[in-house]
Image 1 (tube, rainbow, N blue to C red):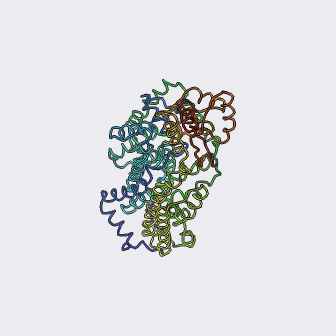
Image 2 (cartoon, rainbow, N blue to C red; image 1 turned 90 degrees about the horizontal axis):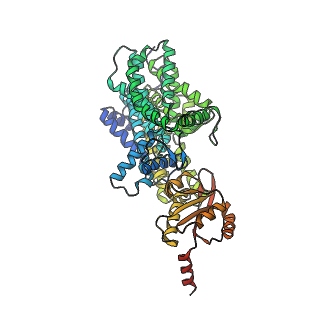
Length: 590
């Protein structure tokens, strides 16, 4: 093995240490505490805008949140259910974390905590911040403190982590677990078994494995195990792994993950393992699930949007790592990324966040390349693609107003101004890149991301009311029951609109109605009932009401756009025209 170098003619300049970006990095490398504080501030700026106001995002997020809510309602912390349906695709870890967060929110006095989606997002927020700090820790095994900070900052400001930090599901926590295990694995790899690793490294690896398995099954083993195998083949020995103390470590991981697996096996027999491993995991490997198929190469293209603003630098950093593949640091990063990326490209089911556990390695490669004067506009292909530093904010400045107009909404002045500022800072990053001020360009890109988070999540999403269909429907149902029926807690049914978010917002006992006749019977069986009816079923619903001799009125009509279906929708909110409604009609006639 060799040490990292350019492996070129030495003509590439090193970054200028006297620039504004260089001074910020010099401050960060002055101590781990400084670096950690700056990284947390970057994370909060990127993750908090819109954290509370963003509606439940169908379909996965409200499924997780609703299943957690049912755990709290029933007190059953073992069996995972969405209404009456067993939800056995993922283990219980994230549900327990969400339940703890909601319980803490209730204890602190948060009103309606169980229907406040932000409370369920707290584990994802914590996981995203932890993943950023752990990237810094992992990078310290391979790079200098300055480079480790820059790598972690690029991860914290990335588009994909901004999204996942705001979604109440597993991926931000899984990322933290994967980076913890890889940081420990890097230290074992570089130590070559010559020294005893600190207890903290041992704990990071095996707790990362145990919690990762409890959160998302075997994926953490895939992301950590494949690099371990490849490096052992490269080394022609696996003795370096002994430093991680496999026997006590395996016992620790089993102590974390095994008890629940035993309990769910006793409760459901083989059903959980059949659904989790057979239907969910193997289904993704064998055949593409509905709407999620994409050809090989999808992740490479998606990377330049999902890992913005660091994608361009990371792509060049990957070349830097390949050139230096004989160095142990670069060999580790390549083993972290290349085998898993190839496997994921070959799996037919693809979603942008599947490759997220590989992004910290690419960020570290970028930072190493920047620190050694390789990453920059020093070759034509590096120079030509500098526009990628401004791609996302400029694209959103153009695309979001068009999208809002298409939906029948319009962006407010504040959102447009914030988008324009984010785009301007992104263009500044491009200009700095062209002038070979690479560290300044990287930090300008991170600054652009921070402003973009405010523009998109903090401001623009509030203006896009058409996308808040379930939220608007739940509020309309509550208003209709209160005004037409004087009923504070209505029983709600829905026909044609079956998104998980409406279950989370309207209540666990929401009834999914099969057809117009069922809907007519449902509304006729009691006074305190509301039915949500999509346009496709309204004629049939009216006919079924007439045949059943039930009088109903449309209290409101909610217009919106179903993100998953990709279509505009009009949904009527119907209540029974009972005695109270008849009295009001009579008074109006007199």
